[in-house]
Length: 451
Image 1 (cartoon, helix red, strand yellow):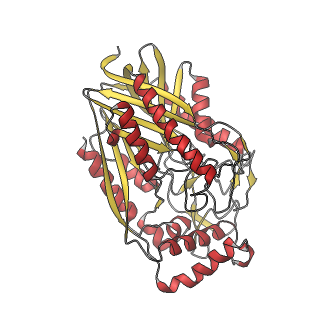
Image 2 (cartoon, one colour; image 1 turned 90 degrees about the horizontal axis):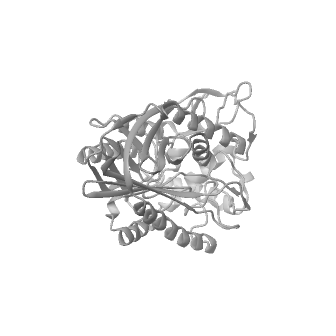
Image 3 (tube, one colour; image 1 turned 90 degrees about the vertical axis):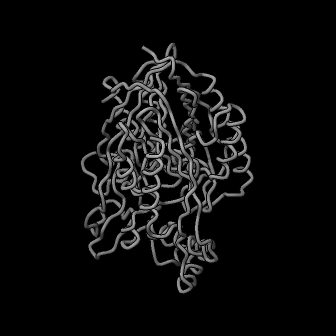
């Protein structure tokens, strides 16, 4: 039986950019040269008792908190939904646009696209609220094996590298363990399509090149909808800051449909399709056997937290300035690093020079949404797997879905140990060591507050 007091609506809007729009995600300039598959904004509206909330997943590398604040205010004006109850997530595809200090922040094509995107996200929210229908909700946990891998490694010389390259003989061991759980929510609606929400943590940096693609999250949606009649699938990326698709020790056909890219990472559109199939398969594992739960109410909370900045010392600045000048002059060959290590030192140099004069703190948002005994926890940056695991253990919930790049795109949240060990994420992060532990503590407190 459907619950008349619990209603759910769905809407989908195409948000594919035009040709020549900047693509974000690397420390090199890219502009869209074509479209492999369309980008989408998928919105789900929930209503229970006297409250309504909206979650929206957008195929994008990352959207600024400032822009999303405007969108949330627009949605409030259009729907009456409290802006703190609006949860806007970027899937973090590296073959999509998104404002960034790396490249393109003031580019006219990107500015034009973002103005259009604001309108389209708000439209998706409005349409989802207009589509509210009596519903029932179930949940389950599947497993997607051997498609996500820790990307930080201890090397034989004692150093730590991010993405050290396939079959690198100097690799000693990975640092950490991936979370292969796929959170699944199934929402059956009266006289309407079933909505399936999937949540899994992994970097969508699988395709490469300069053509627009939703990467493997887009394939997850397609395969679920193709396999299960009358469904709409929405994907929310999880704690993926230290995880990606690169298997550094491939066997058999593991390297099918892949190539070694400019930064030493293996990529391929066919491999994005493979990951999509595996994650969609994890949804199939539990779809028919979800545990239905009675949704009596919903609640939400939004808060701003201050994080100490990773300000450089004066002694670090000359070398950082030299590396950045060489990079901007197209003279990367004069920087004594290659592949991912080159990306690491360039990103570290950018971070240092950006923070040469402060600020002392960054203020970032965190958003929690409770649907009955299930919660979405939105981190504005890219949390390490340890943050996701700790958040999922918060007491009082049947299921918690940690989501990256939510209501903002504020950078990496590395665990404290990563700052001592090294690697791209910690060296590039604009936050001081302790950021992961602080955002985890705040997230757990926020979840408890709405419980």
